[in-house]
View (cartoon, rainbow, N blue to C red):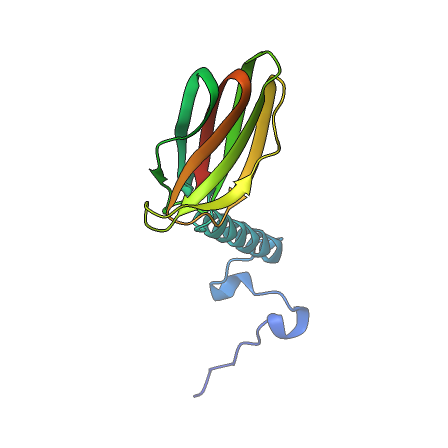
Length: 165
């Protein structure tokens, strides 16, 4: 051990690494490391948000034409029934385009668990003039159909539903 003098590291006195000990001294290194970590965290958060299951494009929609536009004379009738069991909410759009004489239109949305026995789900307010009417619906079961009553002479109207899961 003769002739060996231990080397004193400059970090002990200055807090900075000695360039002779193999460490690379770069000014602002701490700031650069924090900037990289912040960027990685932001990328990870963005990826988590992008992969969440509640994305709008994952929601399925279906448009159903219950009744095509046409003249319906004084009568009571129903549309065809449709299976809507895959959907959780919907909107019914009634477009009354012509009225003859003094007529009224009563629309009832009906639901069924089995497509045999029908129950009233929602009664839309009586329509007595041309125009558009919208009715939001939820909790409607397996099947839906439209029941309508035209009082007076006739109404020209259509009924469409848009449903989402």
